[in-house]
Image (cartoon, rainbow, N blue to C red; front, top):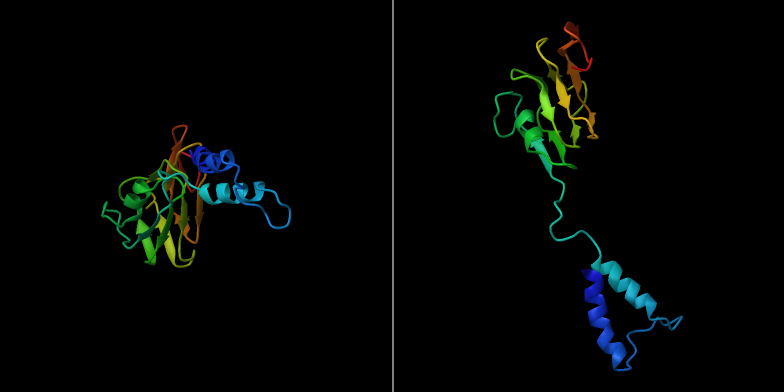
Length: 155
């Protein structure tokens, strides 16, 4: 789309025999054309910008600013950070994530996400790339081949 726009803007000038614009050092109009295309190129109008979401609650009750809700609302490229410290104890199963996101806690000493010895902590969809830092994952629980496992084994 942008290329055709640039051609439509430049073609009438060339047809009338007028110089489009010349680089002062080389006399080459290609410099101007490349510069204009570089300025017009960029993200398409309908491209979604990444969003930074902030967890403000330690609850796992589905409230609007809980970690569970914000993970569910996130899209590829989004970042989740925290304005709270303490422990998030999961009460509704693992935190399920279907997108490639970044989760950044305040520090592993200040934020813990606990599976409460009852559930896995994260259930991350295959094929996604995720980064989780600045927090402690604790007390996860899962079953693997019908056997109970504690820790971070896959479910």
